[in-house]
Length: 134
Image (cartoon, rainbow, N blue to C red; front, side, top):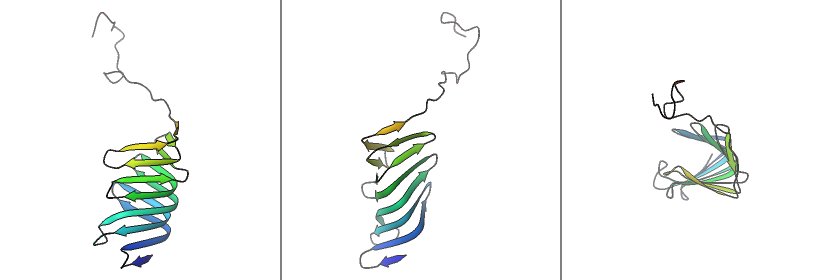
């Protein structure tokens, strides 16, 4: 760890693991720029073997920039976002943390079909017909 008091930044090197519930980030290097105190994080720059995970979603890339002011995460360098078996990749992926939406430049996706369920959660009666509801 290297701390720059005047520059309001700290750099972590090695196998870095940062946790902020409900998610976590791992990388080879993480630079954090902060405001008045260490808890006032402005932005983070992760490099090398970046992995960001939250619940059943995770993303990997070579580089990530997290901007707390704009509430965005920008993934570059072979970014891939996973949710379950599904994955999407592109040249650059921007995640908007407040809306949980993403913009993927030059997107390529692998989506696995899911079993559809009816309004009654998949339960149908053998006696039901279109003219005769249950």
